[in-house]
Image (cartoon, rainbow, N blue to C red; front, side):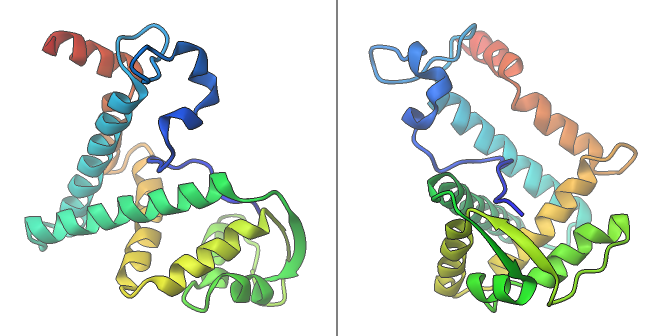
Length: 203
């Protein structure tokens, strides 16, 4: 079991992207090769597109039962929480331990239903997850840091909404679903080629 790496948004500074260090301009922005944009520009654009993806999905799933303010608040909280997770994942020390689901849950937080979350993933392949199931956990410090983050949160709805969002987003990635069109729009808006094209038009 490893920390997630496929975050849609990141709390990392531009200088933490080593693959672009040779393309840094005189003003300190990393320039993505073959385009006219900086990583800061791309990150801002991507984050806004991600928020639009979330809000459109919420409106469709909830059938417009939430106000615009409520929808935006949920989206902002999801993005903020994901940024925190990405920061913890990239900053964690590399270490591996063998432990049970119960021990892992204790390492993280009583607020996080680890067995329940894992069971949903393993239902697809028919594997039952129990509290005494042994797992090999990589980057244990990440999970400890997540535990501290969860313990510091006063609003548990943020965690619940984020967990729900990860499943809804996975559904949106599947072809043939009502959400897939929204997902494709999001991916187009966050592609480097499409963004550079729109930026050139604006200029």
